[in-house]
Image (cartoon, rainbow, N blue to C red; front, side):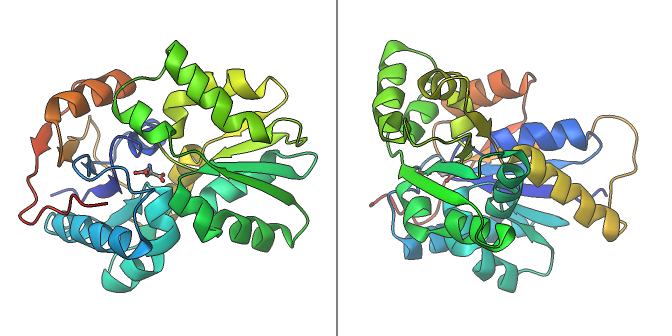
Length: 271
Ligand code: DGL
């Protein structure tokens, strides 16, 4: 049986990575887990995010995937090394790919990063950008805790959304950025609103494209790219409201999905 690529996020955000994986690697079977019952992760402690990420990975490992993709910046920032040491398959995060994509795009070397409180607090993007550029770029970071709830509500484009986006991004204007990393996989859902707030001179950088490229190159090197013709079956799991998840996923991906609701045995709903 064809082994799948397992992708996880705190909610619907990782679907922005899934869409790009489907586009670049249409033969690959995908398993996706959105932990919508416990989103957002961005305001939680690093310990709790590590614990939740382990639980999702333990759940996905029962399906014998050939790779795990942590399509969540918050979880990548604090749990990538932990998960890599716990499983025997390759584990891919989204921060390295996002940083590489921004460095490939910037001309002025002034790069903005927006993300959850957890991601920004971790300093993971600054570290990746500085290491990859040899310290030659200037990084301006800002946490935008209001964005993920808008996306999980499916509220991508409204006056209220635009107002929240404008006020969250106001401190970044006038900083001479030419590129802005969407350092949370939920944020591409708000790309139009973010673009309007930042103006045409700022390129929005999503890690999805570069992450899909990294997935391809790892699978290519290990001779594990899917070969079968035809459309592979994708399977989605979510721990919260399946109606909302299905609606957002199908609209974003432009296709019907197979969705299985998952009820955690021991819910951790506290912040
Ligand atoms: N999509 C996630 C990220 O990339 C998590 C957002 C959240 O749950 O706060 O950081």
